[in-house]
Structures are given as structure tokens and as C-alpha cells.
Length: 371
Image (cartoon, rainbow, N blue to C red):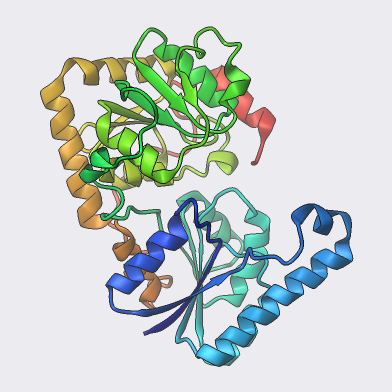
């Protein structure tokens, strides 16, 4: 099949668009790429002069349509891409191209997603909570499609990659941007061998509990893959953990799948979509408070055999059901959105009233609101 994939491509940081491209190619499809973030003008200039912003956005839409006319793809897959207007997508459909969007980044641009969703043949969202919001708005071509992993990138061999984060890999690893709720939760791990990397953590250097944990800033994927593959416990704290559902979305973030693919024992905050896809104590370990986080980490560090067994089962599960090849097949299926998604799910506890919600964390998230 001739496929046009529109995404934000970063040559220094592969992510969902690159993983999806590789999966589609492995499935035998002919993939052409379009970067809908390749603006002509700098962002600050566009922010200052609205006419220039409109010009640049119009230019990107015109370039995409010209590519559709030239390549005649059978399928256009857009990842997020709110810069592409309803008129552009409707024009592509009029040319005979089926158009789907994988609106993966919740809650970013959620309202814009509601506006553009009707233009697509199918609109996939990484958060089942967000799909519910779409259904309430009468958008019945919207369906849940979680993130995934790339078996060639998120793998046990990542531990052998030559790029080093500096020093030995600590027992417990967290990689992610600084947010107040993450700082609060990490305090519960004081005294353990914990390493924290990610943008913004310099803001926590005056926290005596966090200072010994902070190892560095943003990492290239090859480095964090090596950390996950080499650590004893990989910690995952969702954006908006324990905050309002319209912030957290109850989703399973990208790290849920990537950590499991790297063969790590994952300790992750309890989110509804995680429970719909994986089993606590069988594939990973869940927590609902700082105290429970510490207990889960200490249990894992004490019991090597149990930790290794759960990590192995988690990796087997993610590779058998949750790779980007699995997700690509859904995007290729014209009936998938009408079926409401085809993932095998498990019953999750209710999305509201989560037991053990740390009040301080919830207040921090609520005060911040969206991204």
C-alpha cells in the first residue's frame, strides 16, 4: 500500500513517527514522509506576527496537498498534526485518499483535536478517557489506540549500546521531565540507589532529598534505553499522576511499553489504561501513593527471582500484543475505528476516586492544569 505519514520528525530523537514508519515498512508498505512541523519561519517570529503564522501554516497545508496529488497515497496517517486544517484533510479525501489521525499526545491540543476529528475517516487517541470525551461530543469515528514499543529499539540488547550515561547504572532509574508531582513522589525513595535524568531537574537541586538522585538532563534515546535495560527497577511516573482525569487522561504513556520492551521491571503509578492492558504483579508493579511506591521498589530489590520473572512476563506481553506493528495494523484497518478499537483489555478500577491518592500531589497537578 502507498502510505503518506505526516508527523514531527526529529533526527536527534526518534519517537512515535519514526517507530511507526519502521513498522509500516516492515509490513511491506511503501511509506512517504511529510514533516508538518517544518515551518519556514522561526516560532518566535510567527508568534509575534499572526499574518506570518497564517502564511507559514497555509504553506505547509499546500505542500501536503501537493504531495497527495503527486504521490496518490491510498492512506494518509497523521500523528497529531493540528496544523493541518479540516479543509486540507477533506481535500485529500476527495482525491481518494483514506485519512486517519493518531492523536497520541493527551492532553496537548485536545480541544483542537475535537475540532479537526470530523474531517478524518478515523481518529485514534492514546487515552481511553479522551475517547469518551469524543463520544460525548458525537464523534463516533474516534477510537482508543495506545502507544507501543519497537522491538528493534526497545530491547534487551539496549544494555550493550556503547553510549554511556556517565558512571554505573543505579538500582532504580527514572527518566523524564521535572514536574512537581514527580518531585514529591521521588522524595519517598530517599536513601535508595536512585538516578534521575531529564529536562528541568536543576530546579530541584535545592531539595535535599532529590539532590543525590539527580544525574543529568535530557538524554538521547540510546542512553535511556541502556539505562532501562541495565537497571534493577525502572520507575514510571505519568504526567499529572494522581491529578484530575482531564490532565492525566488515565492513559498508559509511551514509557509503559518502552520500559517493558527493554526487559526492565517497571514500577508505575496506577492508571486505568495500564490496568486495561497489563496485570499488576504479573507484568509490572503498580502504586497509588508515595508509601506504596517505596514498598513496591523495596520488594523488587529484595526479591531478585520474582523481579526477573515479572520483568520477563512483562516483556513477553508487550512484544506479543503491543508493538508498533500491532498498532500499524489497526491504522490500516478501515473498520477499526467503528469497532471502537481492537485491543484486548482487562477490567480496570473506576477512573475516579482512586484509593491512596496523595493530596499534595493531586493539588500540585490541579494547580498546574494542562501542559
